[in-house]
Image (tube, rainbow, N blue to C red; front, side):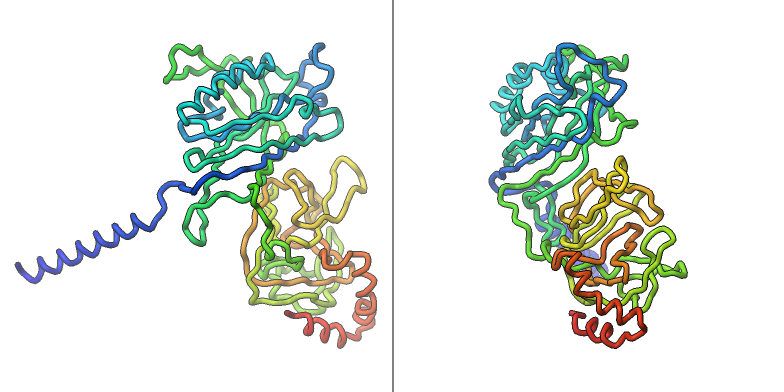
Length: 419
């Protein structure tokens, strides 16, 4: 055998060994051990009686929703799917408010282990009266063989509208360990769906020719989200990093008076920062400044392709666009999907999704007004460490020193609190 052939065989062996190692170590499909109990909390934020497309039904005293139905299942089952079909029995549930057919169907799926379990809320918990929002909570168990959860609730008195979510994966990949583990907590908004019974657009289920053609399911795009979903595992406990009441990561951005954009780690005492539309305020101290710290932050994913990242206990301004003067301070970990925030130009930004991220740096800059614009969103300079009113009083001497041009104590305190 020539030297060239030996070299080629050596390269081939190395390549095969590398491929084998990747196949062994790289996770290809979700696998989580045992089972996990989840609490599914649905908050309804849309009033059906206020929507002109609804036709009043004399048999219904109040508009609202059918009981919430949740199912833990495998990929071989679906409760409903956009652009496809509803599960057998859901059409009857929507039109006649009858659960018997869908529950009988789910029982059969449970026998062949396509469905692990299902649950529904009580009838009396499901009324949403005008001008209020309602919240419903049920539990459902996911299993290592059935890691998907789907939920469904029909509007009433609409003939074919409903809301829910389809096949949410509970066994997720941990990007740090590269191992699959049970989801701990998730928040997201839900969009109303049109069952398509009166749309004159039908599809045939290829797998079941005996079943008549069905209306096409599609999002009701001209309506905003009809509610929010929170899914939490029974053993979920917030980590200490998620509870720290500090500040912003180094990469968070503010705008100086001259229009230049600066990261948190580029700010210096005396910078005049934008605090709103045509308003500014000078930076007089840092209550925390650590460019090397690694911490967990809450991230708000907003409309207009924006996001805001800050520690759990940092206060921001939440408003109600329908009520003048409704502005209030809310800690980051208390903000919910659907809440409304103010942008730098005064327009409304809606919270679409929540997540936790790990980032570098801990910065808490204080302006004399106590307000900031961070990443284009109006926020407070205060955290849950001290109540804002009390903190404002404690810091009043430092604001006075800075306003008089005597900055020594501000610089000294900022250095002492740097870490």
